[in-house]
Length: 221
Image (cartoon, rainbow, N blue to C red; front, top):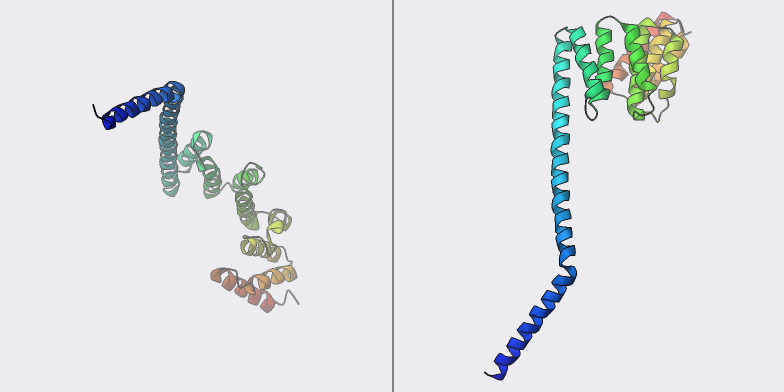
């Protein structure tokens, strides 16, 4: 046997001994880590499948409830929305609450709709933006069915320049003020909307029409 062959065999034996020593020392840990990776991947895939299934099921239920409401089957729609509010997944229970309030309004139950929106607005577990939207929806109903104080209580806090709903809040408050005989207050609000370049175009147009109407009536003199 040549010297080169001898040294190669010795090196190979040493490498095998080192590999065996490493496996004896770290092999169980490697196996445990591999098992954890497999289990973690399986759990994630299973959770992802479950959440997608739940979301799809709730989405289908919400669409079915909307279809019932759109065809005038309000009682059936309310029952379906109530079930979704109780057992739905993700954002669908909240969407069901908001839509149920709208269905109550469609049925002619304005007081019930306001109550539902007020309950959403008072729920501290709901994001502030959605609570503000509920306040605005209740106020818009009360423009026709309530007093100025009822509307003001819900949307006065939404009228500052920093609030994204300020334009609609000012419109609701302006309409309620005009209805209550507070022409000067109403004019100030509609002028504020008309002069706000950030307001939607159609809302600014309505505000200009209301300002012209109030000025033409002479009530704000």
